[in-house]
Length: 133
Image (cartoon, rainbow, N blue to C red; front, side, top):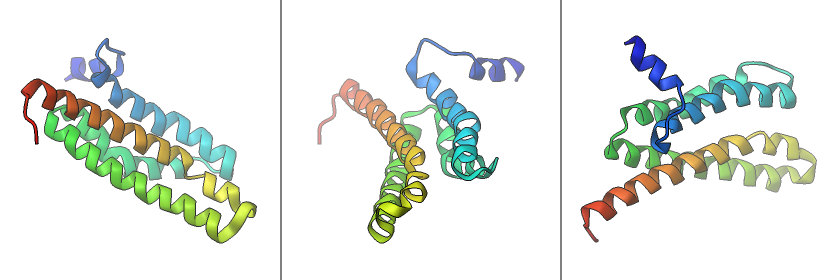
């Protein structure tokens, strides 16, 4: 168990194993800094990040192709929801509420990265398997 935890924290040469680490760094480091800069509060952004990206982290740990496909579906949904939040914020508030709309931008970017990485893994799997639609 201890070796498994240590192996999760070390950077590996395979990209797929580092996606868990990137998501954890995003949640625990970047979102706390981002939330403090934008709202002058700590932990609110991290809690929201854990709720949004916690299932993706769990599925990255599982590491199967089905998990990557599920990560892709979840992340595409999150990406669309965040894009709607940002677009509605600009539409309803105009330029005056850019800070409130831009608050969601890192969540949008991370959801986009997760969906891209999931699609990349799934497409490699389909390519190796040789199955076409």
